[in-house]
Amino acid sequence: MHRLADIYFAEIQPVYTFLDPDAVHTAVSASTNHPPEHPSNCVLLGIAALACLFSKGESSGLQSEIIYNARASLEYSTTLAVPTIDHVVGWLLRVLYLRFTSSPNPTWLASCTLMHVIETVKLHVEPAPNTNPNSAHGLQETYSPQLRRQIYYTAQIFNTWISYDYGKARIIPRDASCTFPSEAWTTENRIFWKLSDSLDPNLQLNATELESMLEQTVQLKPSHPAMKLKRCNIALCIYRRLRVAGYTVSTKAVDKILQLGDDGIQVATTMAEAQSPWWHILNVPFQLLCVLLATDTRASLSRVEKVFQTLKLLADRYGPDAIRETWASACTLLRLQIRRKRDDFELLNRVENDILACNSSEDIMA
Image 1: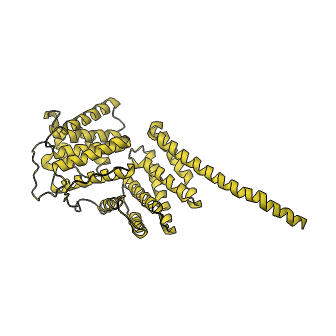
Image 2: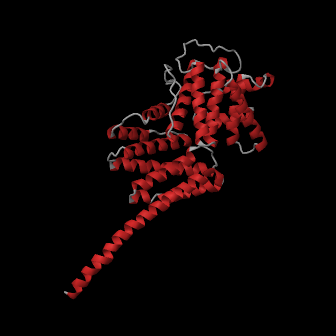
Image 3: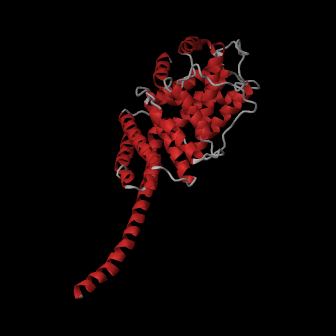
């Protein structure tokens, strides 16, 4: 467990910060004396499950056992009248795990359960400066007001993006007053969250506002590869909003999208070669393909080959089951585009054959 915790803090913590490493390792050392239903087990099993995704040396049997027990501990938490913050964190880790590994509906349902547990625990309410959780077990006493804010906003951004991606409703707890974790989050994290919140489909944004958001996205300089892919995903989302709303997209904005797309494909390729399991590694190439085909310019279509090379690399590295549906959809989109281009060619070719050829004959006779 100590080794799996180290893997977690090396791989996940740089992107999503809501746990104290020292507190977790202390809980690991004490866990052998805890019964299975102990609240901290929800956290430790969630950490172990995520770490297994990044660890190439774990047996499939051990992973299956960890995942089964993690799910069982969370199911037990739903029977409690008053769950704890440990249970909230356990559900948050479960959502991360499903985001890596599962289909849309279970991931969305888990994220909604997470938000409901947050409301039950009142984690959405701004904590008092000397807040002490109502339990002295497990990791409970280690959650400072700042960590509580980080847990809440991380949970909210997951529920938000999962809802956006799959066209579902997001959960916003009533009377939420928890302030933003400005002290702990980086500038990039704060801007990512604000951009995400602004992209709510129920908000009406004009072209100027959307292009301003795109400029903010371009200016971000995240260091972690997963955050670079997240930046690309947000930019593609903004571009789709511009297109769907029927706004005229400036050439400057299109150039920025193509530039971010180039960066995203490079990052996805590098991560695929390292067999990194972050979910954007597949999402970004496919969403970029959709945008390139819809933009339908020489500059955009010239990038389609590189996108397909990346998708093929993903298929080779992760196996057909991981990307079968995405690959099939990408191939269908390409074939539809080719068919439309051929139909356009036939229309123009008919003009050349029927009219230009006739004019040429008349010119010769004259």
